[in-house]
Image (cartoon, rainbow over all chains, first blue to last red; front, side, top):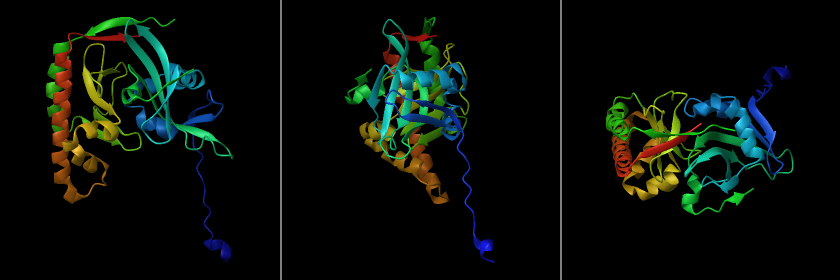
Length: 130
Length: 139
């Protein structure tokens, strides 16, 4: 029997914790797999006002975007608040490898967290203000 | 509108904990984790408390600290692309961290980690010491 030897590959669907369209019109997804990798370290991820709400805001209306030192990655920064010279940003690192492909263009969130500075500016990367 | 308040962190307390952190790393109470994909290094508690936030000590090192000045870990972005480039002596650490663990590499890896931990802690302490005040804004 031929069918005995055919192994069907069953793809388990990726569960996402966030899926939205970013400022550039591309679908951006945060898979549960990536989320779980970072949620015990960046605990803000477990707060619904941060994930998905604040991350979505950072993707749709970022204060600035800046190229990451990691290949094919873009960082979205959203200024949450400032007090004198102290700032707090939501930082979202997005893998944009599949942004420009013709079929089903999509970007994936690598991680997201709160941080008080823009690291990439230290390497003279030019930000794009939105 | 988000209500923001400025807090002053306890410099002495943070320094004391950073000195003690070398011991925490050595005894395995703090874990060392390198994310090759994101080029990020994390050393700290397995579970960071919910009220901890990232506080930048210098151009490279951030600490996970709570408003009560409890240090829970250290965090470096662009570890290989930036930090290691400035600290070439530490490049074996990267090899050890990125490598698939084999038993024979264990000793080498431990030595490399020890060197990194020492360097990290020293730098963090120097940065804290060099600051007049440690001020953060929390919402």
